[in-house]
Image 1: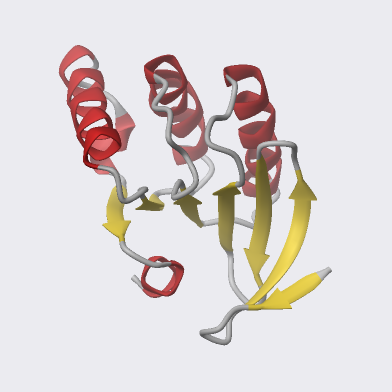
Image 2 (image 1 turned 135 degrees about the vertical axis):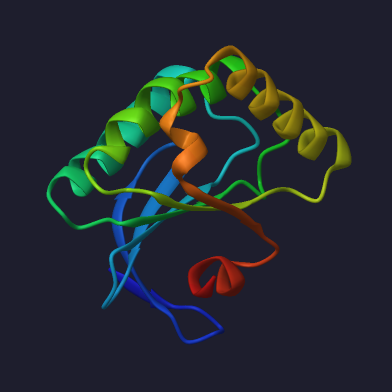
Length: 145
């Protein structure tokens, strides 16, 4: 099933999970994961990213947009797994471009910043340092950036 965004991007639904959806931007290797609930339990988070990992390993993804605007709960253990394990593995499969859309919530944004700094401090050799990780305010900006 495909939908067209207000900005004209055609998004093909890859899989609909209980807490998030995975789409591909048609004609690109850009994958979008969008949280649809305010929290993603770590087990579901890992299943979701396992699916994106399959797509990446198959050569279908080289850019990931993570739309977190619906999240209200920050979970440090999920972020640590995502950075230390998942991103490390995906780096070796060519996924080096990441875009994040954060909720309009100062506490959440600051939690992400502090969490990322902690991960980088405790893991000085982490490959995430060599990734192109940027933040965007909209889906359009994240796709185009």
